[in-house]
Amino acid sequence: MKFIGITTEGVLPHEARLIAVLLDNGLYRLHLRKPAFTKEETEALLQTIDSRYYDRIVVHDHFELAVKYRLAGVHLNRRNPVPPAITGNYTPALSRSCHSIEELSHNEGYAYQFLSPIFDSISKSGYRSAFTPKELTEAAEKGIIGERVIALGGIIPERIADLKTWHFGGAALLGFLWQNPTEAGVIERLDQIRNI
Image (cartoon, rainbow, N blue to C red; front, side, top):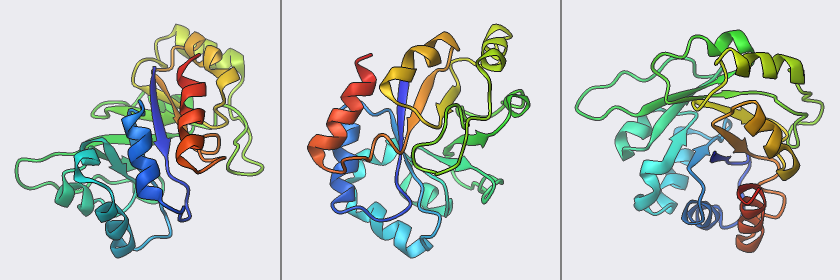
């Protein structure tokens, strides 16, 4: 099972260092999601991160930065639903956000897709689970949920077994991951999830 981290919307102290620590300790990908950031602010944050991590970073906004820095990919969402025009020999991987089982059936061209919210969100108050266990079980049995579908929303260690039962290929971590935004804190959170 792959684990993907998503940044908080705001700025964290020593954020570049925390991102490096997570990627050094088993995080598969880091999604840089700062919807209020300008292109310049996003680029400034990227420049504080060691370039050896760029091939594991995905941006949710300002897709031209993915090409400029040869990042792992771009993530399509409601704010940015269209992939960037690519020229040259570099093509970032595509991922996207889905909020229904039906959306997952249109999966051509995506490295992976987020399905959310699987459980009640930790980071977004009032953002409730959109799926019943029965719906997720049926989607798994039909092969709709599989290796390239990543669960998002309310992911905590106690729920990893359910995600495996439903055949999710991974989990995206946001609220749980950043509850103690220190080096030791993020490593502890990642280890709690990975060691299930």
